[in-house]
Length: 397
Image (cartoon, rainbow, N blue to C red):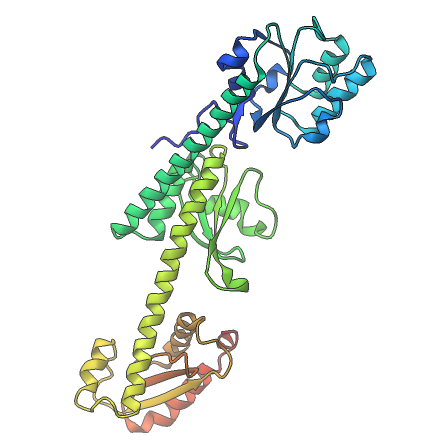
């Protein structure tokens, strides 16, 4: 799918451009003449407003195309200059004045101030129904919103299909990178890179882009025009964010549709990451249940070896060493057990013997079963296991 934003729309915000508004039948029938700001007709028209009061700028939010017949502009040049300046300061998209009973042609003070402030100023030589102009432009804006939604939903559909087809996080990020035409990064909440997809300028590796723009500067604001979207984690506090999507505009500008697509992709990634964590935790709980049942005599000695092999434990013919790690209040029953199991397994890897590790969240225990080569090494292995379980890297769990 072509990810380029329709040129009728301004990539900086949701709305059509001033140029597009002037091309619609309503304003076109008024024979519009651009007197100032011709080089800024690509501004976004967020909404349309019509009014005739001198203080109308205070009623606007910015991004509006203002329609007026000029009765609120004032009669003195100073009033007219102030009127235009306040509109420019408010950040409206353009000022459109209909010629008629109030002005046969716009005063020089009005035109000069519009030019000096960079405000697009348009005069209409024929009368037009403002309500028709408003309806046309608002319809165009709404249709533009719908078009962006359709594009974002297409990305969501492609990501979903990739997952159903057996894909994972790399495939989702690749789809998003292809859609945006820019590299995409998945970071931890504290800014550590997890995965990168897409290509940088001239086909540069995305890791080079990340290292240059994000790696040393992860605590600084991202480059202007970037898109950052949190991947929800489903937990309270720091657990509410599992990761972060970062889109950097290094090959092409990013438009509102790219943020919308990233937000939809973030929802999919949240499910993928959560499922991966759940699967890992479920496996660890299953091993914990087995070890508890074995310790409490609910599994016979004849059945235990076969069940242990299914769980990946193949210790050989030597004696076994059971160990239980108690955590007290270190973890709540619902959080972080997959991470803990992984960390303990990594610490025990240095012990050099087969290990079957499980978790018992409700009881706050991590049961272990280690395979020994001989009874004589029981004390030495027990000491090494105790040292591993006291490792600094486990204190934070």
